[in-house]
Image (cartoon, rainbow, N blue to C red; front, side):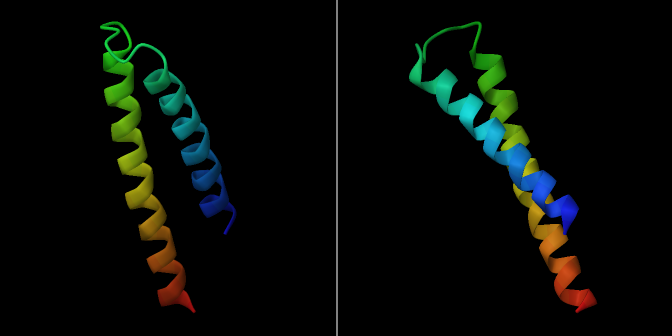
Length: 60
Protein backbone atom coordinates (compact mmCIF):
# COMPACT_ATOMS: atom_id res chain seq x y z
CA UNK A 1 0.00 0.00 0.00
CA UNK A 2 2.93 2.32 0.65
CA UNK A 3 3.96 2.11 -2.99
CA UNK A 4 0.48 3.13 -4.09
CA UNK A 5 0.57 6.18 -1.83
CA UNK A 6 3.96 7.17 -3.24
CA UNK A 7 2.62 6.92 -6.79
CA UNK A 8 -0.43 8.99 -5.86
CA UNK A 9 1.70 11.71 -4.23
CA UNK A 10 3.99 11.79 -7.26
CA UNK A 11 1.00 12.03 -9.57
CA UNK A 12 -0.44 14.93 -7.57
CA UNK A 13 2.85 16.80 -7.61
CA UNK A 14 3.37 16.28 -11.34
CA UNK A 15 -0.20 17.42 -11.99
CA UNK A 16 0.44 20.60 -9.98
CA UNK A 17 3.55 21.38 -12.00
CA UNK A 18 1.76 20.63 -15.28
CA UNK A 19 -1.16 22.87 -14.32
CA UNK A 20 1.25 25.68 -13.47
CA UNK A 21 2.98 25.38 -16.83
CA UNK A 22 -0.35 25.27 -18.63
CA UNK A 23 -1.63 28.38 -16.82
CA UNK A 24 1.47 30.34 -17.74
CA UNK A 25 1.96 31.19 -21.38
CA UNK A 26 0.84 28.01 -23.16
CA UNK A 27 2.69 28.99 -26.32
CA UNK A 28 6.08 29.05 -24.62
CA UNK A 29 8.27 26.95 -26.90
CA UNK A 30 10.72 26.23 -24.08
CA UNK A 31 7.96 24.80 -21.85
CA UNK A 32 6.35 22.61 -24.51
CA UNK A 33 8.81 19.69 -24.18
CA UNK A 34 8.36 19.76 -20.40
CA UNK A 35 4.59 19.78 -20.75
CA UNK A 36 4.73 16.79 -23.08
CA UNK A 37 7.04 14.88 -20.73
CA UNK A 38 4.82 15.62 -17.73
CA UNK A 39 1.73 14.44 -19.60
CA UNK A 40 3.50 11.20 -20.50
CA UNK A 41 4.59 10.79 -16.89
CA UNK A 42 1.01 11.16 -15.69
CA UNK A 43 -0.14 8.50 -18.15
CA UNK A 44 2.58 6.15 -16.97
CA UNK A 45 1.71 6.75 -13.33
CA UNK A 46 -1.95 6.08 -14.06
CA UNK A 47 -1.09 2.73 -15.60
CA UNK A 48 1.21 1.81 -12.70
CA UNK A 49 -1.46 2.78 -10.17
CA UNK A 50 -3.99 0.55 -11.95
CA UNK A 51 -1.44 -2.28 -11.99
CA UNK A 52 -0.87 -1.97 -8.25
CA UNK A 53 -4.60 -1.85 -7.53
CA UNK A 54 -5.16 -4.97 -9.66
CA UNK A 55 -2.31 -6.80 -7.97
CA UNK A 56 -3.70 -5.96 -4.54
CA UNK A 57 -7.14 -7.20 -5.56
CA UNK A 58 -5.66 -10.48 -6.76
CA UNK A 59 -3.73 -10.94 -3.49
CA UNK A 60 -6.86 -10.40 -1.40
